[in-house]
Image (cartoon, rainbow, N blue to C red; front, side, top):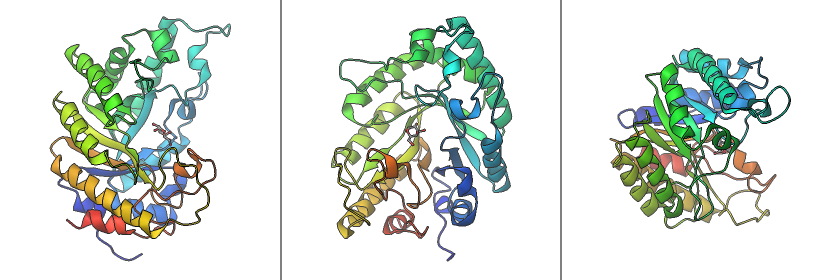
Length: 332
Ligand code: GLA
């Protein structure tokens, strides 16, 4: 591999630079890219409740342990993703031994145990936990997403969950993470929730903007700035937790492309350039910026929202080479 300028090194006085990883990414070309350009990793799936704790009496630490070892060997830190989420959580968590919905006490006890085990195993390398993921409802006029966690633990559950994690790891940043939370409809709801949580004394340190973006959104930069300022006004730090810049608008279901057009690549370059200049401007409140993947060779966007449609949302191409977008963000 050519010795190109290191992204993490370039940003070392700004914020951490992260990537979401699978265990396969720790080797080969992706392993090389991680070592050179990143100083933070997030398990794409391996630390989600359903993956790491599939049965009540069985934890599967294998993949997460490999990631931790890789991080420690390469002087990196990890983001812990995620404790309380409505997806990819094992069903047993919410059921009692008779197969009926578990009581609040039982679910709380299980969550405490889970958090204790996972925090104690990884807290030496984890600098931030996504404590609660995606609790805000997308539908207009509704504030909270109706989830089993909320139904069983009660309306005050978010504060309770942050307290549980705080009791096990008093040092890492505790983050509330969500998507579209820079878009006005969801930003205002999120701001309201975070403000209440802060006022109630919740041990919450920051908000995660997932940043699943695309090249066509003309409002992105304006929305992003406004969101950063609003959230920072609550005294919270901001992390960009799952960034990718898709070639397709969400509603666009076209499937005809085998490679991105030059127009697309150019727009992507501009978007990355603009968002990183906003990130740099707000470096006092932004503590990390994580891409949701390593290179365009593999991205969850290849299967979402259109199964099997290739997308190219990252800054390294399908051959793990830096794209024009990469050059833009290291050159300022
Ligand atoms: C959400 C989750 C992530 C991941 C993505 C899709 O954003 O927070 O863990 O599942 O969806 O990959």
